[in-house]
Image 1 (cartoon, rainbow, N blue to C red):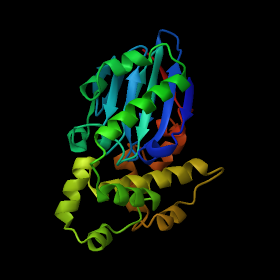
Image 2 (cartoon, one colour):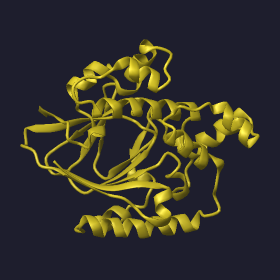
Image 3 (cartoon, helix red, strand yellow):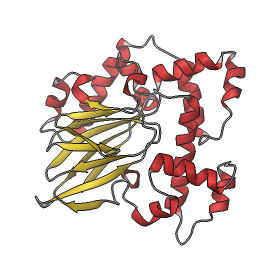
Image 4 (cartoon, rainbow, N blue to C red):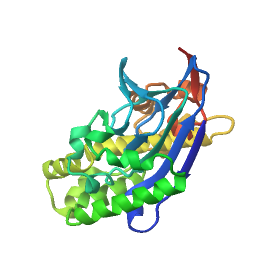
Length: 272
Protein backbone atom coordinates (compact mmCIF):
# COMPACT_ATOMS: atom_id res chain seq x y z
CA UNK A 1 0.00 0.00 0.00
CA UNK A 2 1.29 3.45 -0.92
CA UNK A 3 -0.33 6.67 0.25
CA UNK A 4 0.87 10.17 -0.62
CA UNK A 5 -0.78 13.37 0.62
CA UNK A 6 -0.30 17.08 -0.03
CA UNK A 7 -2.07 20.20 1.20
CA UNK A 8 -3.23 23.16 -0.89
CA UNK A 9 -2.22 26.75 -0.25
CA UNK A 10 -3.83 30.04 -1.20
CA UNK A 11 -7.48 30.31 -2.20
CA UNK A 12 -8.11 26.57 -2.51
CA UNK A 13 -7.08 25.94 1.10
CA UNK A 14 -10.46 27.38 2.15
CA UNK A 15 -12.25 24.52 0.40
CA UNK A 16 -9.83 21.61 -0.08
CA UNK A 17 -8.42 19.74 2.90
CA UNK A 18 -5.90 17.66 0.93
CA UNK A 19 -4.89 16.01 -2.32
CA UNK A 20 -3.79 12.38 -2.18
CA UNK A 21 -2.61 9.42 -4.23
CA UNK A 22 -3.35 5.85 -3.19
CA UNK A 23 -2.22 2.59 -4.77
CA UNK A 24 -1.68 -1.03 -3.78
CA UNK A 25 -0.24 -4.25 -5.14
CA UNK A 26 -1.73 -7.50 -3.87
CA UNK A 27 -1.61 -11.20 -4.77
CA UNK A 28 -4.31 -11.90 -7.36
CA UNK A 29 -6.32 -14.03 -4.92
CA UNK A 30 -6.60 -11.30 -2.28
CA UNK A 31 -8.43 -8.03 -1.79
CA UNK A 32 -8.03 -5.13 0.61
CA UNK A 33 -11.05 -4.20 2.74
CA UNK A 34 -11.02 -0.88 4.58
CA UNK A 35 -13.58 0.89 6.75
CA UNK A 36 -14.38 4.45 5.64
CA UNK A 37 -15.68 6.35 8.67
CA UNK A 38 -17.52 9.60 7.79
CA UNK A 39 -16.29 12.90 9.23
CA UNK A 40 -18.36 15.35 7.20
CA UNK A 41 -15.85 15.76 4.36
CA UNK A 42 -16.58 15.09 0.69
CA UNK A 43 -14.20 12.77 -1.18
CA UNK A 44 -13.61 12.71 -4.92
CA UNK A 45 -11.50 9.89 -6.39
CA UNK A 46 -10.30 9.57 -9.98
CA UNK A 47 -9.54 5.91 -10.64
CA UNK A 48 -6.40 5.18 -12.68
CA UNK A 49 -6.12 1.45 -11.99
CA UNK A 50 -8.30 -1.62 -11.48
CA UNK A 51 -11.98 -1.35 -10.59
CA UNK A 52 -12.98 -1.27 -6.91
CA UNK A 53 -16.21 -1.61 -4.93
CA UNK A 54 -18.07 0.18 -2.18
CA UNK A 55 -20.27 -1.78 0.20
CA UNK A 56 -23.02 -0.60 2.52
CA UNK A 57 -25.47 -2.81 4.40
CA UNK A 58 -24.45 -5.77 2.24
CA UNK A 59 -25.07 -3.97 -1.08
CA UNK A 60 -22.01 -3.61 -3.33
CA UNK A 61 -21.36 -1.21 -6.20
CA UNK A 62 -18.42 -1.50 -8.60
CA UNK A 63 -16.62 1.57 -9.98
CA UNK A 64 -14.08 1.62 -12.78
CA UNK A 65 -13.75 5.37 -13.39
CA UNK A 66 -13.87 6.81 -9.86
CA UNK A 67 -16.34 8.17 -7.33
CA UNK A 68 -17.78 11.19 -5.61
CA UNK A 69 -18.70 10.12 -2.09
CA UNK A 70 -21.59 12.09 -0.66
CA UNK A 71 -22.28 12.65 3.00
CA UNK A 72 -22.71 9.36 4.85
CA UNK A 73 -24.47 8.94 8.20
CA UNK A 74 -22.44 5.78 8.87
CA UNK A 75 -19.42 3.84 7.61
CA UNK A 76 -18.77 2.30 4.19
CA UNK A 77 -16.57 -0.68 3.37
CA UNK A 78 -14.23 -0.25 0.41
CA UNK A 79 -12.86 -3.25 -1.53
CA UNK A 80 -9.63 -2.75 -3.50
CA UNK A 81 -7.78 -5.24 -5.68
CA UNK A 82 -4.33 -5.71 -7.16
CA UNK A 83 -3.41 -2.74 -9.36
CA UNK A 84 -5.63 -0.27 -7.49
CA UNK A 85 -4.40 3.26 -8.17
CA UNK A 86 -5.86 6.73 -8.26
CA UNK A 87 -5.86 10.41 -7.34
CA UNK A 88 -8.14 11.78 -4.63
CA UNK A 89 -9.34 15.10 -3.25
CA UNK A 90 -10.79 15.61 0.22
CA UNK A 91 -13.07 18.65 0.45
CA UNK A 92 -14.19 20.28 3.69
CA UNK A 93 -17.93 19.85 4.38
CA UNK A 94 -18.60 23.22 2.73
CA UNK A 95 -15.90 22.79 0.10
CA UNK A 96 -17.38 20.82 -2.81
CA UNK A 97 -20.46 22.88 -3.64
CA UNK A 98 -18.62 25.91 -5.17
CA UNK A 99 -17.04 23.64 -7.79
CA UNK A 100 -20.16 21.86 -9.05
CA UNK A 101 -23.67 22.78 -10.14
CA UNK A 102 -25.45 20.07 -8.18
CA UNK A 103 -26.95 20.53 -4.67
CA UNK A 104 -24.93 18.52 -2.14
CA UNK A 105 -28.16 17.02 -0.79
CA UNK A 106 -28.48 14.97 -4.00
CA UNK A 107 -25.40 12.98 -2.94
CA UNK A 108 -26.62 12.15 0.57
CA UNK A 109 -25.91 8.50 1.44
CA UNK A 110 -24.72 7.92 -2.14
CA UNK A 111 -21.46 7.02 -3.85
CA UNK A 112 -21.75 8.10 -7.49
CA UNK A 113 -19.62 7.76 -10.61
CA UNK A 114 -17.14 10.62 -10.84
CA UNK A 115 -18.06 11.16 -14.51
CA UNK A 116 -21.60 12.04 -13.44
CA UNK A 117 -20.19 15.09 -11.66
CA UNK A 118 -16.97 16.03 -13.48
CA UNK A 119 -16.24 15.78 -17.20
CA UNK A 120 -14.58 12.51 -18.26
CA UNK A 121 -11.56 14.32 -19.68
CA UNK A 122 -10.39 15.16 -16.13
CA UNK A 123 -9.55 11.52 -15.36
CA UNK A 124 -7.96 11.04 -18.77
CA UNK A 125 -5.58 13.97 -18.20
CA UNK A 126 -4.32 12.46 -14.91
CA UNK A 127 -2.86 9.32 -16.48
CA UNK A 128 0.92 9.06 -16.63
CA UNK A 129 1.58 12.07 -14.38
CA UNK A 130 3.51 12.22 -11.13
CA UNK A 131 1.57 13.01 -7.96
CA UNK A 132 2.90 16.60 -7.98
CA UNK A 133 1.89 17.06 -11.63
CA UNK A 134 -1.58 15.67 -10.86
CA UNK A 135 -2.01 18.11 -8.01
CA UNK A 136 -0.95 21.06 -10.18
CA UNK A 137 -3.40 20.02 -12.89
CA UNK A 138 -6.28 19.69 -10.42
CA UNK A 139 -5.48 22.98 -8.69
CA UNK A 140 -5.66 24.76 -12.04
CA UNK A 141 -8.92 22.97 -12.89
CA UNK A 142 -10.54 23.79 -9.53
CA UNK A 143 -9.47 27.43 -9.57
CA UNK A 144 -11.14 27.85 -12.95
CA UNK A 145 -14.32 26.23 -11.58
CA UNK A 146 -14.20 28.51 -8.54
CA UNK A 147 -13.84 31.57 -10.74
CA UNK A 148 -16.95 30.53 -12.67
CA UNK A 149 -18.97 30.15 -9.44
CA UNK A 150 -17.41 32.98 -7.43
CA UNK A 151 -20.76 34.65 -6.89
CA UNK A 152 -21.99 31.81 -4.67
CA UNK A 153 -21.53 32.34 -0.99
CA UNK A 154 -23.27 31.35 2.22
CA UNK A 155 -23.10 31.64 5.97
CA UNK A 156 -23.03 27.85 5.81
CA UNK A 157 -19.29 27.99 5.18
CA UNK A 158 -18.72 29.94 8.39
CA UNK A 159 -21.08 27.85 10.51
CA UNK A 160 -19.83 24.47 9.29
CA UNK A 161 -16.20 25.54 9.77
CA UNK A 162 -17.05 26.62 13.31
CA UNK A 163 -18.78 23.30 14.03
CA UNK A 164 -15.74 21.35 12.83
CA UNK A 165 -13.30 23.63 14.66
CA UNK A 166 -15.24 23.18 17.92
CA UNK A 167 -15.40 19.41 17.34
CA UNK A 168 -19.18 19.36 17.27
CA UNK A 169 -19.62 20.83 20.74
CA UNK A 170 -21.93 23.66 19.74
CA UNK A 171 -25.54 24.71 20.14
CA UNK A 172 -27.16 25.05 16.72
CA UNK A 173 -29.63 27.54 18.17
CA UNK A 174 -26.75 29.97 18.80
CA UNK A 175 -26.23 30.34 15.03
CA UNK A 176 -29.93 30.95 14.51
CA UNK A 177 -29.79 33.82 17.00
CA UNK A 178 -26.47 35.19 15.73
CA UNK A 179 -27.50 35.36 12.07
CA UNK A 180 -31.18 36.08 12.72
CA UNK A 181 -32.40 33.22 10.53
CA UNK A 182 -34.94 30.48 11.06
CA UNK A 183 -33.98 26.88 11.78
CA UNK A 184 -35.86 25.84 8.65
CA UNK A 185 -33.84 28.23 6.46
CA UNK A 186 -30.55 27.15 8.02
CA UNK A 187 -31.36 23.47 7.46
CA UNK A 188 -32.34 24.18 3.85
CA UNK A 189 -29.04 25.99 3.22
CA UNK A 190 -27.07 23.16 4.81
CA UNK A 191 -28.84 20.57 2.67
CA UNK A 192 -27.97 22.51 -0.47
CA UNK A 193 -24.33 23.24 0.36
CA UNK A 194 -23.33 20.26 2.51
CA UNK A 195 -26.01 17.62 2.13
CA UNK A 196 -26.87 17.17 5.80
CA UNK A 197 -28.21 19.13 8.75
CA UNK A 198 -25.89 21.13 11.03
CA UNK A 199 -26.79 18.77 13.90
CA UNK A 200 -25.66 15.73 11.91
CA UNK A 201 -22.39 17.45 11.01
CA UNK A 202 -21.87 18.21 14.71
CA UNK A 203 -22.48 14.54 15.58
CA UNK A 204 -19.90 13.38 13.03
CA UNK A 205 -17.36 15.94 14.26
CA UNK A 206 -17.85 14.85 17.85
CA UNK A 207 -17.45 11.14 17.07
CA UNK A 208 -14.33 11.85 15.03
CA UNK A 209 -12.89 13.66 18.03
CA UNK A 210 -13.57 10.53 20.09
CA UNK A 211 -11.82 8.46 17.41
CA UNK A 212 -8.82 10.79 17.50
CA UNK A 213 -8.57 10.40 21.26
CA UNK A 214 -8.78 6.60 20.98
CA UNK A 215 -6.14 6.55 18.23
CA UNK A 216 -3.76 8.60 20.37
CA UNK A 217 -4.21 6.36 23.41
CA UNK A 218 -1.10 4.37 24.13
CA UNK A 219 -2.05 1.86 26.82
CA UNK A 220 -5.68 2.39 27.77
CA UNK A 221 -8.67 4.65 27.20
CA UNK A 222 -10.46 6.54 29.96
CA UNK A 223 -14.05 6.22 28.72
CA UNK A 224 -15.58 8.55 31.28
CA UNK A 225 -13.04 11.20 30.40
CA UNK A 226 -14.14 10.93 26.77
CA UNK A 227 -17.81 11.20 27.80
CA UNK A 228 -17.15 14.39 29.76
CA UNK A 229 -14.67 15.86 27.25
CA UNK A 230 -17.12 15.44 24.38
CA UNK A 231 -20.20 16.50 26.31
CA UNK A 232 -22.21 13.27 26.06
CA UNK A 233 -25.05 12.58 28.48
CA UNK A 234 -23.40 9.35 29.63
CA UNK A 235 -21.25 6.48 28.37
CA UNK A 236 -24.23 4.65 26.87
CA UNK A 237 -25.06 7.73 24.78
CA UNK A 238 -21.51 7.92 23.42
CA UNK A 239 -21.36 4.20 22.62
CA UNK A 240 -24.73 4.28 20.84
CA UNK A 241 -23.68 7.19 18.62
CA UNK A 242 -20.28 5.62 17.97
CA UNK A 243 -21.84 2.33 16.82
CA UNK A 244 -24.35 4.14 14.58
CA UNK A 245 -21.59 5.97 12.71
CA UNK A 246 -18.63 3.57 12.85
CA UNK A 247 -20.54 0.28 12.78
CA UNK A 248 -18.46 -1.06 15.67
CA UNK A 249 -18.41 -0.57 19.42
CA UNK A 250 -15.45 1.51 20.66
CA UNK A 251 -13.85 -1.63 22.14
CA UNK A 252 -14.24 -3.53 18.85
CA UNK A 253 -12.85 -0.58 16.93
CA UNK A 254 -9.69 -0.65 19.06
CA UNK A 255 -9.24 -4.34 18.30
CA UNK A 256 -9.84 -4.18 14.55
CA UNK A 257 -8.19 -0.91 13.50
CA UNK A 258 -9.27 -1.51 9.88
CA UNK A 259 -10.17 2.06 9.05
CA UNK A 260 -9.35 4.45 6.23
CA UNK A 261 -9.30 6.97 9.07
CA UNK A 262 -6.05 5.29 10.15
CA UNK A 263 -4.27 6.79 7.14
CA UNK A 264 -4.65 3.44 5.39
CA UNK A 265 -2.19 1.76 7.75
CA UNK A 266 -4.73 -0.51 9.42
CA UNK A 267 -6.16 -2.76 6.73
CA UNK A 268 -7.73 -6.16 6.43
CA UNK A 269 -6.61 -8.40 3.56
CA UNK A 270 -9.13 -11.11 2.60
CA UNK A 271 -8.86 -14.02 0.17
CA UNK A 272 -11.39 -13.89 -2.65
